[in-house]
Length: 152
Image 1 (cartoon, rainbow, N blue to C red):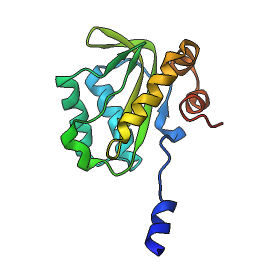
Image 2 (tube, rainbow, N blue to C red):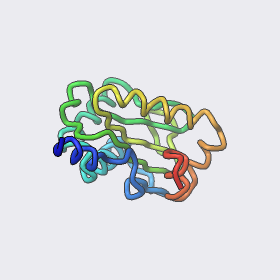
Image 3 (cartoon, rainbow, N blue to C red):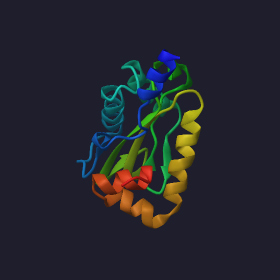
Image 4 (tube, rainbow, N blue to C red):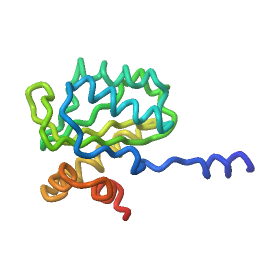
């Protein structure tokens, strides 16, 4: 019982404000993936090999979702590198090139088990609201945090 309670206390939030970077300078797609992946590593969501797995995923299947959004995440084999579900966000006032598509919002995703599917669904739902999508792309850290978490 003692161990179970301790584990619950250590449960991470899906998104922390320090994992939101707004107003980023444009960069190459792989560099952006590595940066957002490193944010996941630095926050303790994943181990370092997950970042390479995010880059590998992109080589075989683009994570561009439309509406100026990309959701890089690791390949299936990298699941063992995920310690906790979490996301990291970068926004680009000047769109970056993502395989010929313009991207203003990049959200790196790590999900324990099948939780990444729930995370993808939540983000997709938010992006269906064009006003929220625009606010996500241009907002400050608090705005992005509020849109993605529903918290103030």
